[in-house]
Length: 98
Image (cartoon, rainbow, N blue to C red; front, side, top):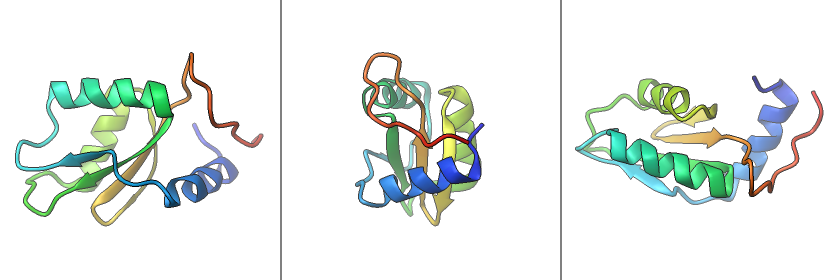
């Protein structure tokens, strides 16, 4: 569980990021989740964009993605979600203390 300071810190870091994944008509499926899992291990912080032609609700789909990949949902703004999970082998982000 992230504290408010940690969440704010991650939002600042994510601001400059470009979305790594796009969710379209096919929605969120198991292969998509496996890819997100792999990329989270390498990058720790990613953006996922929900295209306008998707049938998924960005808020619900983002919380499902975070739950299934054991990641923290940092924020959902419009059609963009930010996910964070500390990496075991490729530690890049040092979160501030709570």
